Image 1: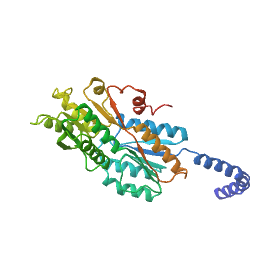
Image 2: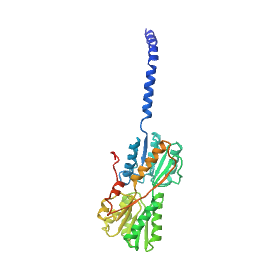
Image 3: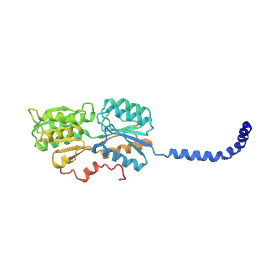
Image 4: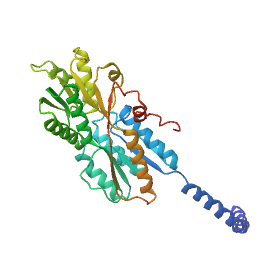
Length: 333
């Protein structure tokens, strides 16, 4: 009985299936077309997040993504020295089918192999802020802060505030990151050529956290030969050095010229003389524009340099600096 019933239903169902087939096919076609129209997603992976330096990159990239119909996946390590987590985020983004990767490497050498693997899978990459030693080419572009210009800006600021004569210390030197190496080399070259009366009396390697940078600076500031000014080459070394100066009541005595925006109030009150800021809003915007063109097959390799700007007490609240520090990634511009 069950067998006859099954047979009966099967026999009646065949014409029905045939009559419905065109409609089913149409619905499937429309459904697949809808799938194809789903926005592609680009992963943006800075060195860390939650700082004025990288959140403005987020804002710049999001502005372009919204205008061209791309989704943006934003993620980063909790610490700006966690290279392994950054590599893992890149690999997971590719495995999840991201249309492209925009990344600011924490270190140069360890990132080469992961980026080559991403490119080998046909996924376009835009590298921000540091050369990897891999030439730009198919699927690979660079958007770089002009580190040579940044080094010259810092050197000339030191020359101005010391009137061309005095002793300085350089902290935050990071041989593992090409961008910081170029920055430091440009600083010292400009000082040697334009301000021979300024002498570098101490050089300190960058450390892995702000507290360590603070401790490093405190040791420097309790030594026998105090500098007249300090140049801090990174975000962490700028913050750590400022904390040390404040702790030892030297913030308005020893001038601090830093890099990479993070601390704004001390610039207003003179605790930090100045900071060479990266225009990471424009860097993020340009990187997403290049990525969009790459995704749509209208871009070749590119290498774009973006000029940094000196932020001082005089211009910290200017329109130019406000745009660079734009953090409005969550709402239309």
